[in-house]
Amino acid sequence: MTVVEGMAIDQYGARQRILDSTAELVIEHGVAGVAQRQIADRVGIRAASLYHHFASKNEIVEAVFRRGIDVMEGAWDEAADATHGADPYPRLAAHIRAHLSALFDHGPYTAAHVSAFRTAPAAVRDAVVPMRDAYEARWTGLLGELAADGELANGTPIGLSRLALFGAMNTTVEWFDADRGNLDELAEVITRQFWNGVAA
Image 1 (cartoon, rainbow, N blue to C red):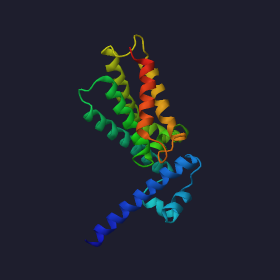
Image 2: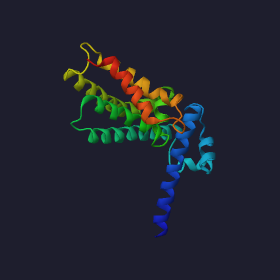
Image 3: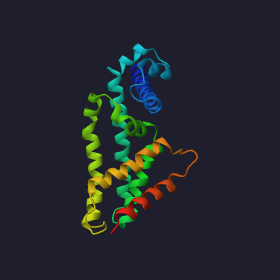
Image 4: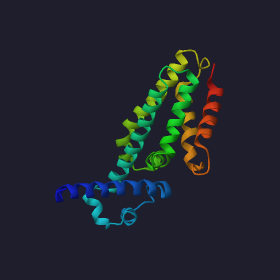
């Protein structure tokens, strides 16, 4: 390994630690409650060294939020592949479980995103909104397919139903302890309650 290669790996490792630490701090304190010095202290570097990797705190937070959406997108793809051709209820259940997995099983990024997005600076929100919209459109599409197939009650408002489902899933970051609770059981409860409310 050359010195240049070693430096590249070290730089990547530092960037990763900055993102990990920022995501954890955002969950603990919110975006406004996190200072760059706090991030640097948790990473174990000088505050000025952050600028070797990111131009500002906003840029770090934006990167955390983008990573959070990437995790959700990946979880969605896995669920879609696993349930291709399945019945409606198992399809919905798989996607709900995948979303919860993104919140609890794959690091702090998605939890940071869903818990702090609305209080982030406008510039950060504006940069991330297209990615959020694309992910939400997947859920709207899934519910729309179920409605078109006659699986949902007539007149079910797809947009409002999706928002209600997102509320049920995303607020779990405020009260569910994945170390003590059963994530599969949580997913089944949310799926059953939602399905019983909208199914034909």
